[in-house]
Image 1 (cartoon, rainbow, N blue to C red):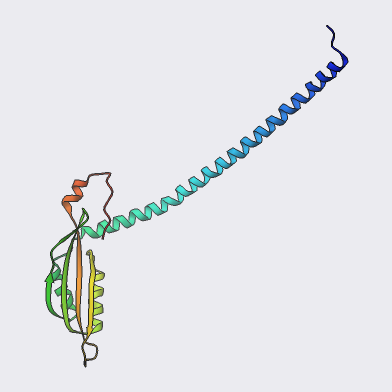
Image 2: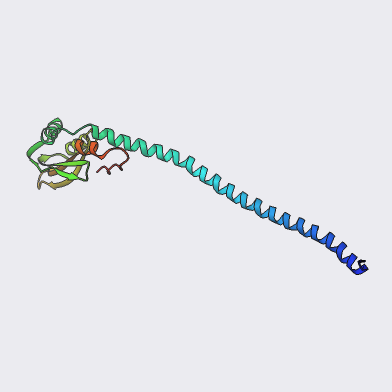
Length: 186
């Protein structure tokens, strides 16, 4: 069976067109793959950069957590005697002390609250007293401050001051075990 002239031309044309079409399809496919891989590599590079950036933030967070835990290692002394001693150091006249009952804060912390009254105190002495308390190595915080100016007397004030001490409850910290989230510090 002989192939006609027309069929030979169609075969030749098909023999030329089909490989060209296959090469074009292969090139388009490769281009799509390259673009896809480039995007994938870019997203992986961004993820690696984020992880590297997060290392610094994580280290900083660990240091802050360690500083907080270190501060709670220093258990606050008896508030009435400690505050009285600090007030005497600044020559402040303490009228009375009033301890409140301990309050549990979460599972890991206990708050001891103390209210004291200072009579006829100068503002400089009050500020230095508060600075001594705030800069101590104990976990203490001012929770109440009421200052009343004494009428007719210059730079003399009556002060009601509330101070709270926060202690880490030892029994609950050992019961928590490893892997559990640390409760937030007050």
